[in-house]
Image (cartoon, rainbow, N blue to C red):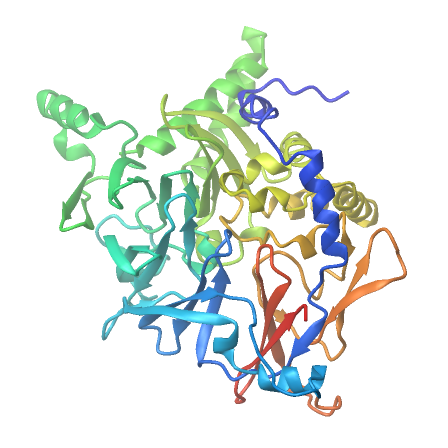
Length: 532
């Protein structure tokens, strides 16, 4: 039997008794088998916005204006319509209810953008306890950037990235935090992770993790920075010691200047001998691991040459890649790889994972992306990689192979069909670190209740290629009975061969779905699927 002995395993195992939804609640969810969004209102009359998502508590629908300058927030409401007369048929009702404001109340619009700063429409995080929304704006990327100010060469730069904390109840901007001459991957929330009231933001360009706390008052408070330095007094200690030793010019000094909530990085490099704090922790862990693997002192030097010294430059060249995530309030899961992997798909490049303890500033585990040991943790404790979702009551129902037998059967089927186990492991671990708030908690994605074609639709927040055929949701308990269907776009009779993309916004607990179809050079088509 596989034994787990390292610290990383204990990070997951100590959380195994965390409260999960009770049996009575799961039993009540079976009613959703018969409470389905089986009616469709096609091509509703709605504002020309980019609809982002429902919040996990179902209180708000968030959208972005087409010019990416304004945030528009709606409150969902159930269709209420009166009809006078005796001929109140279903067709008449749906024709009368084709207006967006029959289902949503406009709360407010706020402008976050400017003439050169635009809202990132694929970025949004929600703090359910305080009903705060975190949005981001940025200027355009610059790809041809000279390697100045100590930034990683080959990565793009953005003149200004601003995070806006908004109280969604009334649209008040509570606080803002800006990063200048930097690069944060905002697509699908990749470079930012929210755990309880802690926020981590990964600066790719400057290889720094910024830890912020969201205060109850709505302020974004700087907790620490992890990168060139790991402890608050590291820079002061190094400066004082280097001045005493007369070697101050042998290493670069990084100055992080903050004014008016703008963070500026300025690094002056006079030699290339300084190893950043996080890299030093990583190299130390790899060295100690190689040292302890060989108990025979006479063979230890050769083992160190093979496992550490010959690979030293490769380890030294590693950078933190696009994503970082919390495992709990102390531990971060980091992904390291080559510079090419920092801007392109990193699946084809060698990559490594590390677990970092923020309190002790130590790397406590290190794995290659083909590690069977890490895959075992991934398979057995998958839900605990989803650290953000446990704060949301509704998100606790998201199906995974750790909590759902049908999802586990799908995983085992994928494993049996894989051409090689090593490639399969790399593919599965390629989903780590987990992307924050990327899945819908809707009961219609509960694999205990329904099955559906995950190539066409799933709980993950992504655009998909449209299909001309309705997407079927079939009952688990009655395997041959389709409970409802979702048809995207308009019925064109199959003659339209243009490429179409669809996205789906499921309300977290109502039988209400928005399907949005985008076709090149054509107006966006929005359908509402609901129970009538």
